Amino acid sequence: MHRPIPIRFFFFFSVALAIAAGLLWLVLEGPESAVPAALATWIAALPVPYALACLFADRAARKALADAGADANGDALDLLKDVDTVILRRSLLLAGEPHIKELAPEGMTQSALLALAASAEQEAEHPYARVICETAENRMLRLHRLAAANVVPHAGAEALLTRQALRVGRLDWLEDEGAKLSAELATRADQLSTKGLAVIGVSLGRRVRGLIAFEQDLSEDAKAAIAELNRARVKTVLFTSGSRRYGMALAKAMGIAEVKSGASPDDLARELQLRKARGSVIASLAPGFESSADLVIDIAPQDTPHLIASTAAIEAATSQADAKTADEKSGAELAAEPAHLQLASLTPLSSLIAATKRAASALRLGFRLSLLFFVLLVLPAFGVLHAAGGPFLNPVITLAGLLLSTIVTSAFTLHRA
Image 1 (cartoon, rainbow, N blue to C red):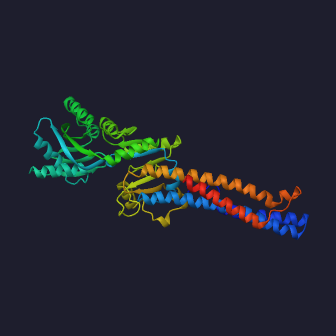
Image 2 (cartoon, helix red, strand yellow):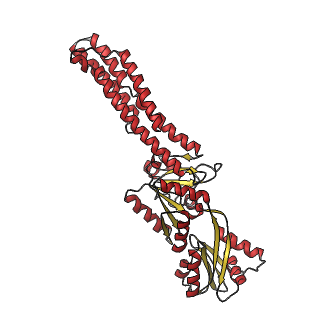
Image 3 (cartoon, rainbow, N blue to C red):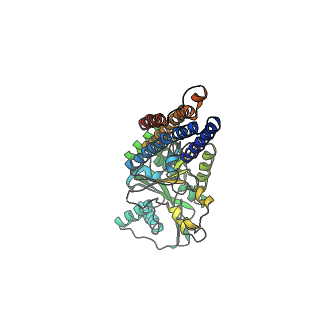
């Protein structure tokens, strides 16, 4: 945990204060007063209560991290206590495998529509692409021979079929590429999206030939975790490339506060930067925004290697233009990288945020108590009472006071943490 003042500062300060006390009383009264004053001042100024408060607060936060089966690097623990916005991705909210709920062709049969979609999606690795291809295979449909097949990130797949562009993907992308969506299909797409179904389109040439709607179960664990985040007053925001109606339906079902849908990764990255400029501390569970968030959270099984990178990060790391080892990075580049937290699921996130808040509160309390006892012990040890006609504070009594202050500070810190 971040410490208000480094412990080593207090160690140096205690030595300096002891030397000052010794020199002062050496000049005023001689060695018989200087030695006990210097020794008592040094003991009184030792940062033992504060050091133990830091230790207990840090252990409390790390125990919560271990209990959650989590792993962290950088300033993840310090940032967690300040997180007020969590960016979610759609895949975290869903459970099981998607399946085709409805095929809505226009001017062709359902089998013909499915065959077109499967032909275009043969090289794609998206879950919807796999479902389309498996369904077509189960129905023993004959696929078309295509040319120039291509996968467009965050949009869909495209290829050439008898010199016509065949595309499968987001409806707004199909329309941007010049495919016309009929009023009937647009209305049906809105109806399906409102029901919480993910809808993609299939276009051939200049027309959208039909829709494919997917259904997938919602994750009850994720829903419970989001409810906990809401109770902790942490704002949840869903970033999705799907339609706004689908995003709103999914957010309503999961209890998510805000939706940003139908935007490109660049648009979403700009949105994150804007929120940070307004003072938000953002934890992102959406891949591709590592450079825009304060804290990147990777959801992966516990046996997955440390700090799982998103697909976008892997692509960037493997490109020759940006290839650079950790040893070659400058200090500024390393400092600019966000902290990472790896969790086995979304469930413990809220409890981890609460635990780090308690640990930070305990550390602040320990610091204040340590400062109070520092003043109460150092003043008489330095000789303030002796200057007023009283005795010097005996070093043995000073040590007893230090032990008592350590016990009291540690007890309150542990109770708060």
